[in-house]
Image 1 (cartoon, rainbow, N blue to C red):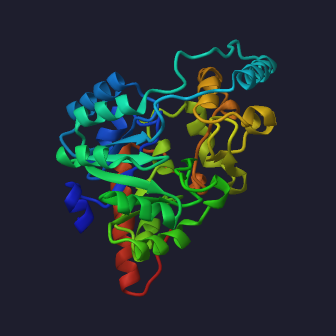
Image 2 (spheres, rainbow, N blue to C red; image 1 turned 180 degrees about the vertical axis):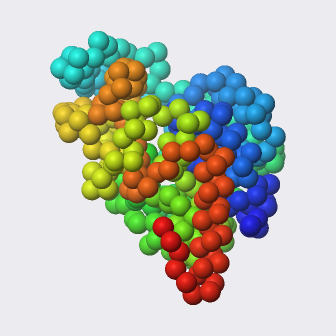
Amino acid sequence: MTSPFAARLGIEHPLIQAPMAGSTPPELVAAVSNAGGLGSLGAGYLEPQAILDQATQVRALSAQPHAIGLFVLPDEFEADMAAVAKAREQLDALMAREGLDVRTSLPQRWAPRFSDQFAALCEARPAVASFAFGVIGPTQLRELHRRDIHVIGTATTVAEVRAWADAGADAVCVQGAEAGGHRGTFLHKAEDAMIGLFALLPLAVRAVDIPVIASGAIMDGRGMLAAEVLGAAASQLGTAFLACPECSAAAAWKRDLPQVEEHRVTTILGFSGRAARGLRNRFVEAMPEAVQGLPYPVLNALTAPLRRAAAAAGRGDLLSEWCGQAAALVRPQPAGELVARLMHEYRLARREVAVGGQTTP
């Protein structure tokens, strides 16, 4: 079942586990890679040394190719400190009302420096480097290629797909509106880039000559085949892996996923200041509009103590429960078994479509 794109990356299956920052420990990455997919370490929140440490742990668990994913951000951020003070007051009041004995604080930095993270990624030398929130520069791309690191960009519109192709990326991952987690949009307003995957995918394939990867609420092998029929070289799945025991998502988050109602999955600004798709829970409904006005990563840093405390207390309703539109189709099982199951479903779907039959859910 090795496709030309998968063979180029040195993996067996055209299946990528999404680099979900904060939820992809080395154990998950290695398990997916060992099963023939491309495991991805979501390193957007990690300091450089942590990137190196976790990459070392992945290599200790797996000799197979893996990816490291980063957010393309400025090295420095300026924040409106009056707005920050108001947001802290509102967040602290919310935590007090919910009985959480923790309060906000000002971090030393709002986020790690991207240039330092990038240097660590180069030193770690994964098979693949993936990026969201923007396009890397030509010098950075040359540095990655010099180290034989494949580059995958994230796009939410055809214009963004072209931007990555023009930059020299080896492939681009199109993120449909259905996809869980942070939106990768960088050339448009987030609300203008909510294009369904099965509309965006063939448009992207027509627009560029590099491989296009499909991402957005793909939960089983049938979805992978459907994406392939529309031109995808591979499928990237995130939500499907959240319920795996190797995933570090909070227990309350994992517990809530099978009960997610699709109409309650929405675009959220109140956790991080950047548009992200997840469950509309108590936090989302209670968050004052003024707090939602803070940008990423400022708001993301301010809500971090609340999210940690909520996870420790088993309060999924106060967590950033990121998930794709079809989250209720999640199957809790070890990551290696899930990869095998997905590929079995994919092969079955291909066979049944070839003979004019229908697949069974």
